[in-house]
Length: 178
Ligand SMILES: CC(C)(COP(=O)(O)OP(=O)(O)OC[C@H]1O[C@@H](n2cnc3c(N)ncnc32)[C@H](O)[C@@H]1OP(=O)(O)O)[C@@H](O)C(=O)NCCC(=O)NCCS
Image 1 (tube, protein in one colour):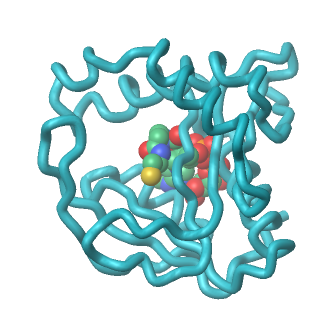
Image 2: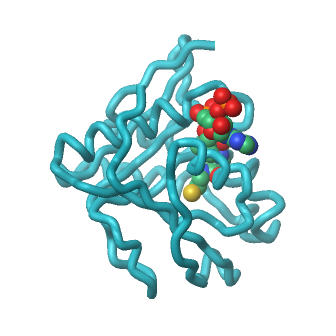
């Protein structure tokens, strides 16, 4: 299976929203409670993505991964570190989100999306990058570790009405992935 990666535009908002919702439902079925996953709405997400992609600042990059037939099956977004939680991430850049549909996992698309974000961060002059991941999300943690990420501090957070624990991963310096 071959993939194409493009910068996302407003025209991709709906397709990304579908991946976002299906990606959460598939990947978080054992991590978040069923009611909060059932309550996810493609329409709401699409509206958020439309707004976000229309006014993106130049430090932020959203990438969409497509199959050879052009179907959106994954996305990643990152930029300057946001100060949302109680514990500082401690890096200059942040991967805000990366999601793939189950049927395209483990074929190198996640790594390719991270490579695109890392290259963007380096071009923008960021010296380090990091992210927050659910502590119990073992698959994603193995992925970040395979790319050279180092586990950092933990923080608790309210996510769709549920208290969850996240753990930071940091890349310093930012790796150049082929
Ligand atoms: C995490 C995610 C982005 C990884 O993308 P992917 O395309 O499946 O991963 P890749 O094929 O690029 O994997 C690269 C390497 O990471 C490691 N890796 C990836 N998934 C793994 C898993 N489930 N278990 C163990 N190691 C894994 C492997 O070393 C892999 O190399 P290999 O396949 O040659 O052994 C993807 O699985 C995903 O979207 N998961 C659900 C959403 C999610 O949890 N996002 C993170 C939110 S913070």
